[in-house]
Length: 395
Picture 1 (tube, rainbow, N blue to C red):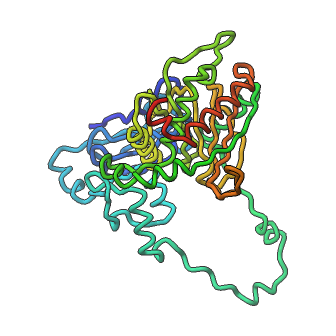
Picture 2: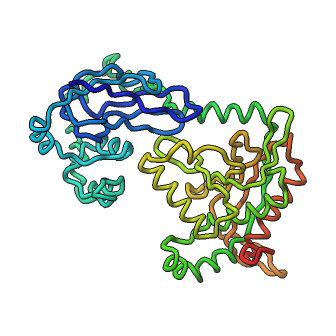
Picture 3: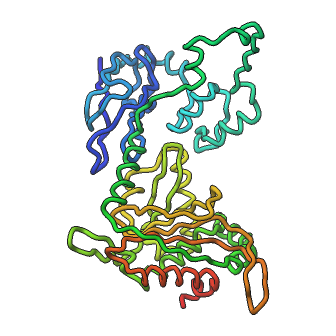
């Protein structure tokens, strides 16, 4: 008996997807729930789970093909229970997320040799990396031994060309979407950036004093991002135009604060949304960001996680960036850029002292936000971070 394998229902606003890879081939035994293939949209990777156990009989869509929601992908030949017992016992392979599967494929590591630390023994990316650290030889091929005679021989035209290799590959859907949105932001907005600097000594002292008790009580580390999210929300409340967006000839003022946190993944930059962030305490913000990071790494982030947002924060400082001009995330009209924290000499009370300084950048749409508002907005963030009692006491 044959069962149809259909493409999953695509998220709203997603017209189609690309079939990235089949994890099973014709003739393979499939256990119910196994991921058969990965579909890539311009936002997320979708898995195609097997609805039943059986043998993969026929494949209709191949790598690189465009797929619509509900479209026929393959046929699964289902056997009776007695026939299926033996294949099930022989193919008890660990289930892997898309990112882990890619890493396993790139390093040629046997996933059955890895102990998973995830739920129900699921293998996580960190498990693979830890295994590679303990067994480096399994991921490396021996370097070829050069032949002195061949090295002395003159190079042919083909040999010369091989010294300047090129590879042409299509953009992933996510990379193409990023390119489209960045180009849209530059073409459709009067974008301008203003800068300021902030002394983070008070924040660092407060964090160092309470991070142990904070982690013990909330089971999450106290980072810097929660301070910046809180400071940004306070500034947005004072300057509602920066939390607004333009729709045609209308301005939409948002009475809520959905803060996008830019996250880098192997597939590209994504911006999951902390919804109603003004209602979250420091622990809630840190847990939300931590969860987004985990989802981004294992490929389980959803379209809902990425939809909406009224303001975005991006932190290039984790990569060592000293100063940058972040690009707007349409239809939002502003984005805050954080940068690396560096000890710098500053003047306090007539004396030169060393303080941990970060440069801040606010890019904004000048059609909606005046320069005065942008400068004052950064001033509020600076004030809140240099005297964090403002955030804690709501003053």
